[in-house]
Image (cartoon, rainbow, N blue to C red):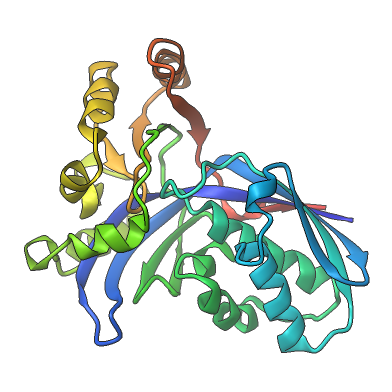
Length: 289
């Protein structure tokens, strides 16, 4: 049996450069995996099946099943697998949980089925599943381009702790809605992403003024009640608050574990909201056997 930890991500930068001819947007972003994770198990079987502790997620369009079938079709193996998925990453929250699960599936089944593909071989398959999936083949700190399918691993960010707040906000077709509400006034040229990538590669630090998400302002207008969560997060001492992806999750780097724990507990117990204390993790912590 193979066991995988599929980590969530936050966006240290997320710039939208413009709309492409295919209807997608070009982005420039620096992603960082964090300790919050789903757990997947993989065992040999005759067919491909998925059991999840949230049964409503075990549907044919789950990225885990898509990844398993895509890899089997590509490699023409005859094996199946019994997959178990324990969800801890909030769903449709901007944290990349489904994409991380898919990448974990590609990596695990490549090993279980002995298909001996490299990460470069897996990248085109990952890109077929979703824009964030290629990054999660690497984990850690990485710069992404295009729709997100082009990945450049970076030295680790020097951040230690962050608090993630996931508002209970439901927006149908959230990602599509968010991108449809972002226009040329919000487009940038990728400069902040390049600057932070260069900083990480040279000095290794992460100046707070380099953190950026193009959706921060758009989200406050598009997602109902987001400002209530944002303001409460700020009132508890969180600074440099930004969206994770297209939201609705928010994160804030915090300098000490003590301070981060206090903010997390107050969000949970004073407000009754879902909040997670997380540390930054590198790609080497992506899987366990």
